[in-house]
Amino acid sequence: RYHEEFVWLHDRFEEQEVYAGYIIPPCPPKPDFSQSHGKLAKLQFGDSTIPQDELERLKQEIQSEYLAAFQKTVAMHEVFLLRLVCHPVFRDDSNLQVFLEYDQDLMTKAKSWKDKMMDNLKGAAKNIGSQFDTHIDPDPFFEDSRGFIVVYGPAIKDSKEKSDTIVKKRQALSLQYANVATALIHFAHGSIQYPVLSELLRKTGEVYAKMQMNEKKLAAKEDLKLTDLLRYYVSDTGAARDLMCRRIKLEIDVDKATKALEAAKKTGKKQLEAQDQLTTAQSKYEKISKTAADELKIFKKRRVAAFRKGLVQLAQCQIRQAREQYEAWKDLLVVLRK
Image: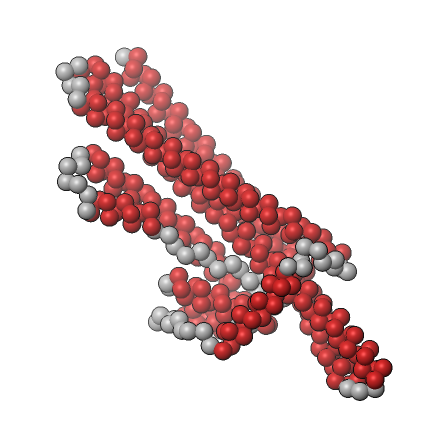
């Protein structure tokens, strides 16, 4: 499936009122291979005077960057589908069945009047969202959940931005290791009349090249296991917030219907119509409250489990990479002593 087809599937879930009481899994982000494409263009149209070892290093960088971007893309799209197929309600959706079983492209089309109507409803939900931070919910559970999301949302967004900065710093460090390695190896090739010095420089350059690959792998793992995890839960927290906003909107509808019934009783006009509207609004509110409570409890369990798994895997990777760095420097010291 193309990424646009995943977006199509996500939009089909968001536009159905029957799913208003559920946390809709966030749409996977669009794949980004721009960094690899830029280096590939440099490799294809580069200067013919580029040394062979430089070309090999550039090829390895392109391969590792493309692999990291591909793994990230697959992981995020896989999480989206797993959330849907493992959900007791979402997994029976006809659009999901079409997405999984239809063997042709799901052609995307221009927005219909129905899509535009849904956009208007989403705009109304955003207006409710502006009142979310100050809203006082009469239900203690939802009030606690609202207070948590108010604090947690900005905090996890800030953590995602800091993690992204750390990954970029590590990528910059990897590039510096590569520059140092290239300079040392070139210097070694130009110092062959001094065999001991040339060998010392070459061995040291090789270790810096290993450090460059080590840091690059670690940056990719940190991006995949931490930054992407934080980025995902920024979106998932936003989906939980949207759910609570939809519930608040129905709560407001109940209040309006109650006032309309009271006004109808005073005037003696359209009492049955006002009563039906109140009954419908209360029914929707009670239904969304029940499903939303269950969804928010699952959201907490899922979030804790995901961070525990991601952080453990990241720590294991950091330990493994640290050991590789230690062994490389240790072996270099042995060579230098000789």
